[in-house]
Image (cartoon, rainbow, N blue to C red):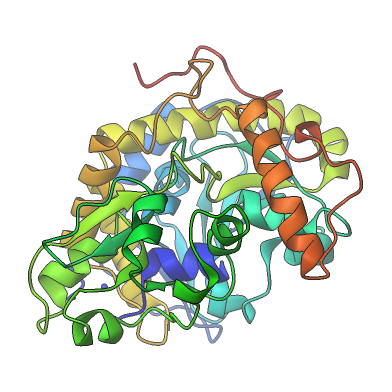
Length: 391
């Protein structure tokens, strides 16, 4: 059984691994290893040369929310040659292109005891930025607020999937009318609570016992609606779950629940103290995302190697899953220019609407968000290069 890469990333918060010719070397007693030079490193040296030395920290630390995978592609795009894989600390580090500083990407989820990234940002001053989705940002805003500076995904990959060929749902209301059971997670994403509160689903049809296993889906012969990420579970069910082994249908939730997923966020104080750094770093992130979308293969090789080297407790990646994810997010426009035409931007009206929908849900659960919360408390487009687009 494989644990869903995306569900564990964004809800808490995968298949033979091909080395593609990359080799790992034994490191020191700390368990680190080095990856041999690759096309990723060469591209990083030649394409990302904005001077950051003396402007950014000597090591730019980014905290992810799960093991390395598809959402990390743009960061791994920036890594120079010979990144070090620190097995004991679940980190990957190397030169950030030719900028004069280093980039360290830290795994999250089980690698950090499932601590929310907002908590890690608050605890560890060495972390410059981390992955924080809209749900978590709103929920934590009362005590551990974060400000997102870059949106890697314009559209959320969050979806509902099913295997009953007689169903052709086009919105949540149709699922409500069918009476179908909706299998979802009890934590991490709040769309079930929002949908029940707004009457899009009934409380009785929502089952929040989903923990990533395909067993319930298979046992129900696909006659169940299950939370998923469109870049992940459809591939796994068709290709890796032998008890199913066929396509599934999906409803992307972007239209009805357009939360920003894994946005790159900083503590509010660092918007000021690291303003000069962010002004130069964020445009590099935009360019790296654009380059990864255009040619993901070199970075995917590195991701496969890193995951096969770390002790991930059974989590793996496959070349097929990554290729499927790349193709799907491109086909569905998940990575795309924002409403203002800029890659990585936030739509503040969209964020405001989400705040209005999420605050009552969290308040009812005793996790009261910041009083008077507004979009500018959670997101900023200040540091984006408006000239960077996918078009």
